Image 1 (cartoon, helix red, strand yellow):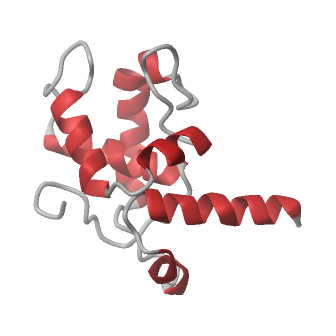
Image 2 (cartoon, helix red, strand yellow):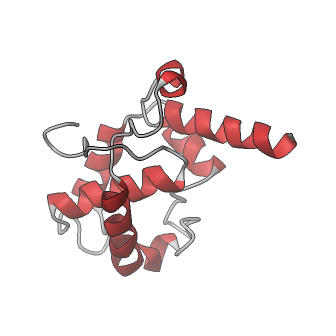
Length: 132
């Protein structure tokens, strides 16, 4: 029961941190997420290739690279939207070569980060310049 409560708390924090209303997220059936499973899979590959050198493969960060999953990430991003996350990645990542990622790579990275923080996948992709 304790594990279920922790999971529910993390799920709620994901919704709040990424600008998704908790009530809306709880009332939506599975499959109504803002990213697709395919996007998240592509994002995982991109993350491991481009981002893991600083943020670590487990997304826990190191030194100046903040965590991208878990309680510390949720605390840092509370009140911010998916658009904020997209724009942060698009304009400043990777730190050693900012603005070098394609729009598709940024969209996929956001999808992967959302998935790793418990947000459900959906049937259609809604992350991107046109949707943020």
